[in-house]
Length: 63
Image 1 (cartoon, rainbow, N blue to C red):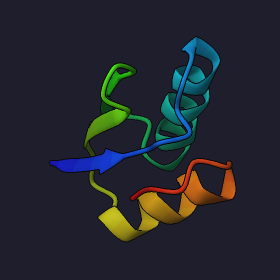
Image 2 (image 1 turned 90 degrees about the horizontal axis):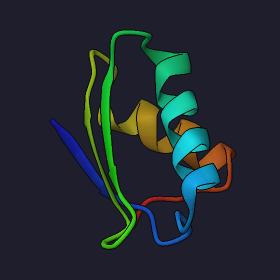
Image 3 (image 1 turned 180 degrees about the horizontal axis):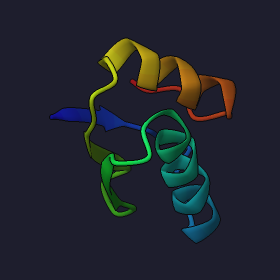
């Protein structure tokens, strides 16, 4: 389980982009976004670093 805080994730479009980015790395990934807390929980075969890098490239750097 990868849990990240994405301060720039603020709306439904952000959730769609974050989810799409993770699914682009791992089509079988499970992604749960919580806009209220700006957190995302990811179950994936990809490493946390790979996921963080991909999200940062899309404008959602993790803290």
